[in-house]
Image (cartoon, rainbow, N blue to C red; front, side, top):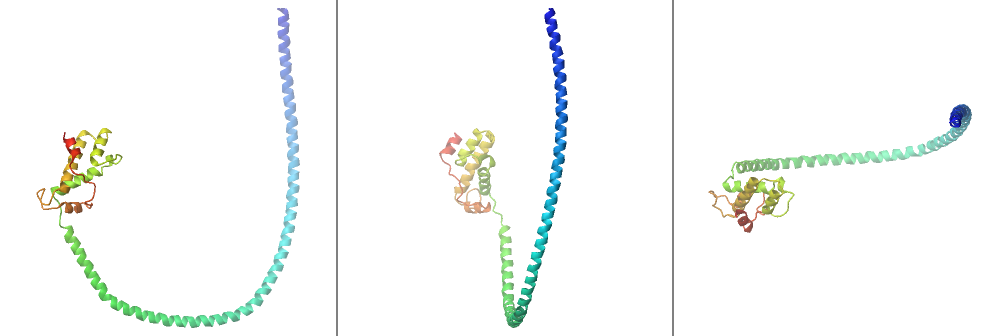
Length: 249
């Protein structure tokens, strides 16, 4: 036990000495590193200042050389321009005379074109008046045609079927309208009552599209009913066939 106690005290003493030595070493290394950094920064600042001075001197020399070259080039250009200007003045005078003659010819053509324009305008006034009268007549015809309502039970049935055909809830399904309605009901998109109403509208629309003139209590034909809703008679309107019989069953 005495040896163990002595050993423990020695270990603790060594640990304290090691810790003190380590902290002293770190402090010394930090001071040395900080001094080295300061010296390195001073050297870099001196070197950078020398490089900037050399660059300034070189830039001044290049600028002076460029100025001398530009001055000689400008003097040569001025001399060449003065020589060319003398010859160009004569050419410009000749061209100016040609342009003046061309302008005179253009003025003559403009006066002739203005005369032709006045003649054409005088001829066009009666035609414009006739065209305006024809436009007014067409507008009156369109208003009279719009005032004639084309409503009947036939058109109502076709309108209901068209709305069912273009229902947003049926767009994601394929096939005819009968299949789309059943698929939408099976997918939970529509209720049973909506399914029954869509099938009823589909069958009544098929009947309204294919019955002869004189049915549904009016003399409105199927083609007139289609035109009332701005759709073509070639749209997908299936006949009452086996699918309707299956739906009734």
